[in-house]
Amino acid sequence: MFNIAEVSVCDCHLLVKVEHLNDDGSPWFWEQYIWQGREGIKQNRASNPDGEFLMDNGEVAPFLEDVRHPEQYLPDGRTWARRPGTHMDNSSILGAIREVHQQRQGGFVGYNGWITPTLEHRTDDEDGCAILLDRFSALVGRYDS
Image (cartoon, rainbow, N blue to C red; front, top):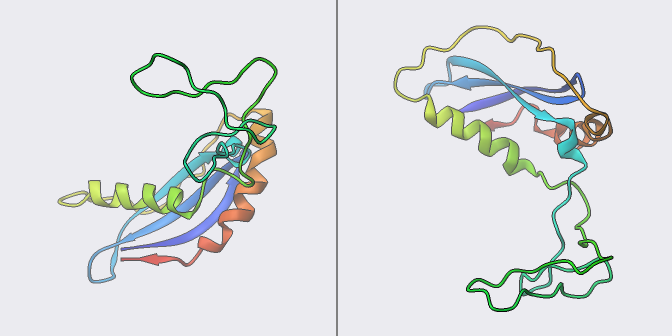
């Protein structure tokens, strides 16, 4: 079980503060999870209903010939079509938290308190952090069991 206590921005990174709980609901440990702001501007490639990737003109990208596993490529002058919105969703955040919670079962003592990190960032982190904050602020107060 866990509770997301805070979602904020720190040095152009998304900072998610989580209180991990024992099975009885009592506090176990606190953890901070950090994502680079640039994750907010990454988008998944668009595909058709058959799972084939699309190019910027809406056409299916061609496949390499004579390969055991079909692989698509971009012809010169083309780019991939992208799905709208960031590639991250709630499961990106919650999955990371659940994984840490599971890994620490069986003896992890934990600590009391959060440390405000100092993080290096790039221009694309500045561009994407507000997108992440807007997308994931609603997770505050989210309990999971």
